[in-house]
Amino acid sequence: EDKVVQSPLSLVVHEGDTVTLNCSYEVTNFRSLLWYKQEKKAPTFLFMLTSSGIEKKSGRLSSILDKKELSSILNITATQTGDSAIYLCAVEGRSNYQLIWGAGTKLIIKP
Amino acid sequence: ETGVTQSPTHLIKTRGQQVTLRCSSQSGHNTVSWYQQALGQGPQFIFQYYREEENGRGNFPPRFSGLQFPNYSSELNVNALELDDSALYLCASSWKGRDLITVFGPGTRLTVL
Image 1 (cartoon, rainbow over the protein chains, first blue to last red):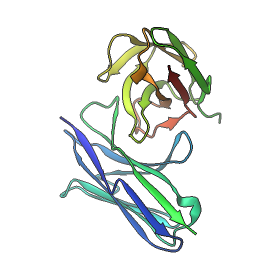
Image 2 (image 1 turned 90 degrees about the horizontal axis):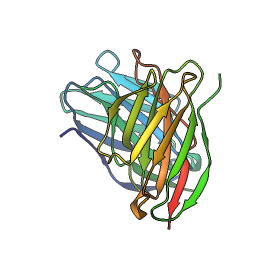
Image 3 (image 1 turned 180 degrees about the vertical axis):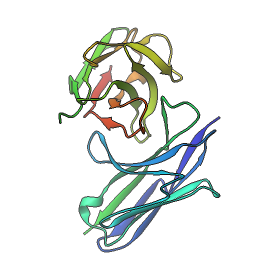
């Protein structure tokens, strides 16, 4: 059965710290991995990683896909209180009609 | 470019009742997916609609059903509500045939008493 596992489930750090969130997957016929940020309601898109694009960066956020290890990391440097959210990882597999989601990492940034 | 909208934002029902949730897709998107997200968990795929037909379904019973209309808006219907149906219901739209960057609506918070 396809699955996506994120770790840690929750994380509390102080403003200015750097955090690394992990996502590992077992998905048949992997196509892409996506990272989303969820604050109050709807998840908002951050990055999409594929075989042809294994590293993405946007400001203080960056993500790398390791196809050999079947995993991805999301790095946030110089964290701010506004980074507090649930970070979700999703993987597109053999069926291109659905994403398989991890449970998320709840990140809390203390001032 | 309009985003994905959902209605209502909150809803309270009692066990056994039926509910209809509505979603308008982002302009230019032809595929809509529905997800159930329980507190503290990632979204769980319910089903997807493409060209007004169900295009895939997750592990949800038949009392969860849906429709997609020619303008790509969609409805999620749940019959015989159970307490465990209490969750955030997310509608998401995307363009079939391209990458699966999915845009989510704000969700409907359903509480079943």
